[in-house]
Image (cartoon, rainbow, N blue to C red; front, side, top):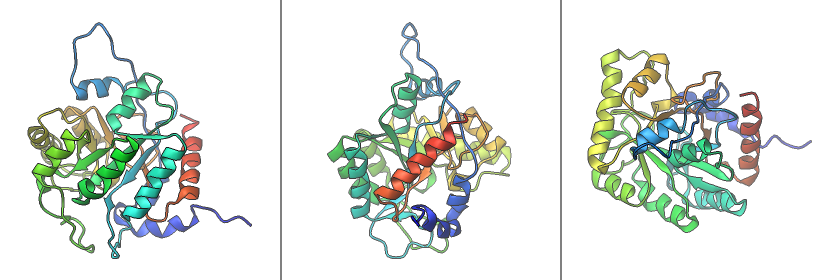
Length: 288
């Protein structure tokens, strides 16, 4: 009997935000063409247009957190540098190119996303410029880093039971953006958004956008929900704050471009498991 390559993912249900349980839930939609006759538009505006009226399955997007050599990883959110390099090699050998979310969504809108895979990194860990950027450059890949705007230069205080990990500083965020990394918001303080009052949702979405845009001196088009959790009010706040798209974790029955699904990637994911996850994504998307 052949073992299920995803079978050992079950223990991950203990991790922060119940990532695997969320992955098994639902979906998103996006897509539309830009008009050549219209004036030049910001990244956020072009991304928003590129995700209207989504048809077909959403592009395959991988969700990472930290790339480091930590032995203590209670939430299973860390991938070793060696494993990450092999995962990117796996994509490259299959002629798949890792790209930032805004590029992926614009390509999808143009019907030109074949062979592209979204690469996203949550929380803004300080290991990103050290361990991730060199590997991306080696393959000609890009990525999106979702930064907790109010915690830049701090640490992951929201993970009570995990080792303290430093987060990127303002200078590092600016350097990452200059190097071609898309910077997105992961809220102001990494709070769970479902159930928050409207004024607090506005603070987490709008203020974080303002802070990050002041750092990178460019529009911030994307928002990533802390823990992958959101409700209608949270999606509405992201939309009203002027983001072009929002990413969570799960597939679901919604059709909003502010609730795009992603695929969790962890230390256990070698080539066999990545291949199985890609097939699973395709099957899930066929009914959309």
